[in-house]
Amino acid sequence: MANAKLYVGNLAYSSTEESLAALFSQFGEVVSARIVTDRETGRSKGFGFVEMATAEAAQQSIAQLNGQQIDGRQLTVNEARPQEPRQGGRGFGGGGGGRGYGGGGRY
Image 1 (tube, rainbow, N blue to C red):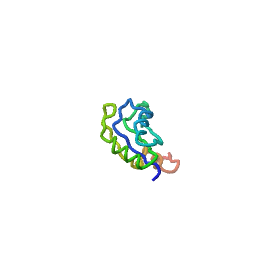
Image 2 (image 1 turned 30 degrees about the horizontal axis):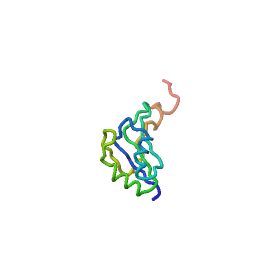
Image 3 (image 1 turned 90 degrees about the horizontal axis):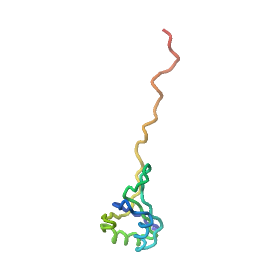
């Protein structure tokens, strides 16, 4: 396993990607750190993902940081699961409008 992606939950809304990377860098090389934000407001959703260079660094990060108080919040740190495919969609599709065939109108 090359890189190991971690889920980091219950982040303080003031956390930045830089502070997240710095926190995890004490356990090994951080490949990337990303905080998930709301599309409309740009505000943090309180969770993010950190990708570590090695599985060992990822495991050590989980062991040391899961449950720890950081910026007044108890972090949740575990291995990230693959994203589930989204169900449904917008509900568009299907047939046309209920008019039937033909030009009609003859009485």
